[in-house]
Image: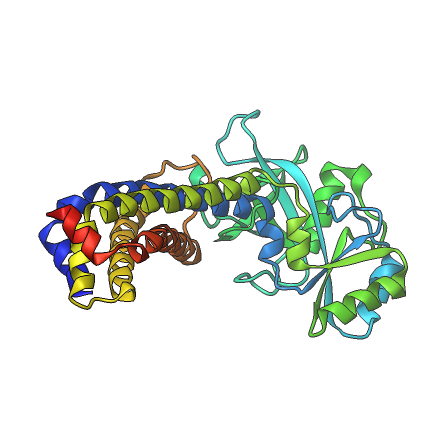
Length: 365
């Protein structure tokens, strides 16, 4: 172990190339992770940020909110099912929004979402006419108090606050009361007005999700009830899945690079390892030194890559690419880089075990 640290201090140039490559791979991991998080927040954040445990769709909707319709009697049945602590409606409509001072045809696409049960970090109830909006709309100059007029009828909605990660299918959202949603739909899309008491989906709070989901579907006979996470996963992917595969490939490449580097380094050290074995050093001690060096290199590269990625996020232009770094994503990416380094360095173990002290010393002299 002391040998590993001594070599790192005295001959840092020997490890510079490996550290630089690990830095590039770590930066790529963080960039891809930020893109995945940004895409997911803009795609399924609406459902993932819901506080409810279950989402109830009509059985023919294929777990799609726009295609779902639950009639009033089924809504009442759901609320009365054993295990249901609270139930509320959730519906949405996509409309064009007009900002103050904008040209007549200068519209932004927004999804108006009406809710009864609260979202994480949002007020439990929204006053009629107010909206809690996706924070991405800040990039369009929207501020608290801004009046956004939606649809052809220019229904006014006042911005009451902002929230991160509540997008739906890459569109920014405006969260309003169920009454405000009905008003907006009636004014702008009268043909889409739902029957009295009906809703698109029902969100349910429960302490027994599996049992309650089965009870709801059995009681109504016309619904499909899934967990909040499953409902979010059912939203069509916008590229996050492909990026996850690229992340996996990057980890494999990082492991291969480290394996190649330490294989070459071990080849250069055969004589040194032979001497160490001759004076009593154990294979596990030599291998531990190799692993230590791999861990140190990956930590140095990871810290620099993390700092660069944070600076990249801060420097992004408004309304550009969907990029979000979260502590969990950063930690996961750096852990994957560390794992790849350790796995790569482990490939040197076989060669270390095969070193014969007499032959190695003879070869080196």
